[in-house]
Length: 233
Image (tube, rainbow, N blue to C red; front, side, top):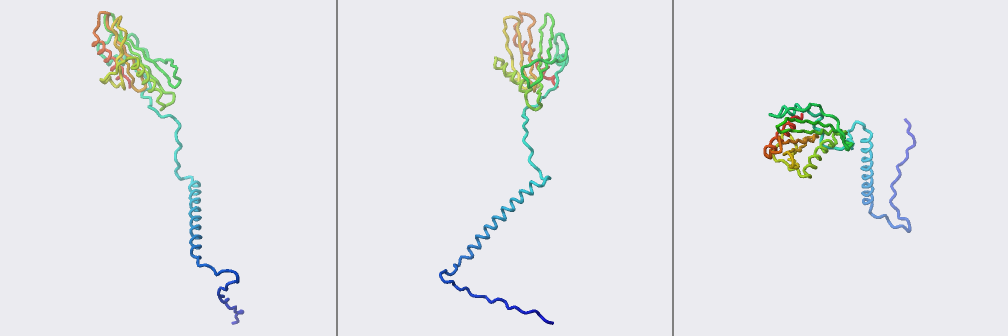
């Protein structure tokens, strides 16, 4: 079997210094290390870029939820008001109820809420009388806290005007205060409290101008305020 022409391997030629050029220096290892380091950096950078594209291209990976721009506040606790008869049923020895009409829409300059008002009166000649006003402030934007904020502001305005915060618990009221009135006529005692998004005012009037028993008047006002508070559901 014939074989093709055989070529001899080239013989290694020793380095021959060219005239005018110095011999090569022994710095090859340093150059090699630098090249490897640079190559490693490029590989890592490439891996980083690749990882970025993998993350962005994979639609199934979880992404951070966008921050909500809706304001956060105390939610409205109540959506309706009771009837006057429901309040009166929680208190003994009240005079007759003059009207049991349901709550009605009320006007307000605050465009962030819807306002409803309940007005009650218990009266009888020769007996102490009681009146009750409830204001329900419903936030137009749920969760904004505008309704509870309105009710709280009503209470705080009364305190700023001289109402004295009550230390004892009045039903389920958040905060309550005794309200003083001009006592030149019949003795009157009041309670102002708020509960969630409801602002409440209670006034008790003595039977006649000769009745100056402030302690009894305040006790009656606290009892009516407690009945009003517990009627809210």
